[in-house]
Amino acid sequence: MASGSRQAAWEFFGTELKRRREDAGFTQVELGARVFVSGAYIGQFEQAIRKPQLDIAQRIDEILQTDGIFERLCRKLIDDRRYAEYFAEVVELERVATRICEFAPALVPGLLQTAGYARAVTLAMNPFASDEYIEDKVQGRLERQHILKDATRPVFWVVMHENALRIPVGGPAVMAEQLEHVSALARGRTALVQVLPYTAGPYSLMNGMLSLMEFEDAPPTAYMEAVYSGTLLDNPAVVKRAYASYDLLRAAALSPEASRALIESTAEDFRRCASTT
Image (cartoon, rainbow, N blue to C red; front, side):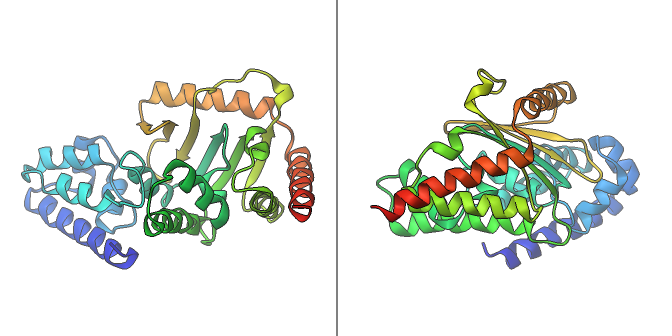
């Protein structure tokens, strides 16, 4: 589904929600209280400013007795084949987040990837896929990055393990371009980037990547990903523990200035290697 038609579909979702809510005699505040979000949050759904998570759509159906229409619409709209099923909802949340904090244990985060790097990663994970499938996945990843180009872009803080700098994804030329891109985004203050060096030793979250997302008018959410699976976490106690783990990573990581120096020197090493092959 094209981005324009997806937005139109979300606008239909909002219009229908407003109609059904008013028919049931609820104000935005009253409905919000029953589905455990604020009235302003309901208003943002109705204006298609924010997209509801699936569990919220399910609760709306239950309260308004709408026979699952909002759940079905939500499932349809977050079903984007360019993304794994467990990740599609995260893409929608990224678009409305005011702050995103990520930890990447082995690869450069998707929001910072170049086309060449994204293509190499996708091909490595799907060695028998068609060129069309690979390019579809790459374009989906690059499209996600538009949020960093908007005037209302989120604060974006990334901690990458040194693995992400050293693993030669796509070869030396691709790695040099990728690391130079990360450095440019850091220098341009689009992203605050820190590197967790090998010398830091064992660290929290050794089993997978973490993304923490904050919103204007909703509780923060954590997303944790392992191989072929991902989990959105919104339990306040669990999200609080995830933030504590991320704080430990930031404390153990190099400063932004030292991190950028390491990224740039590693890029130079890959660039020299590429020029001799």
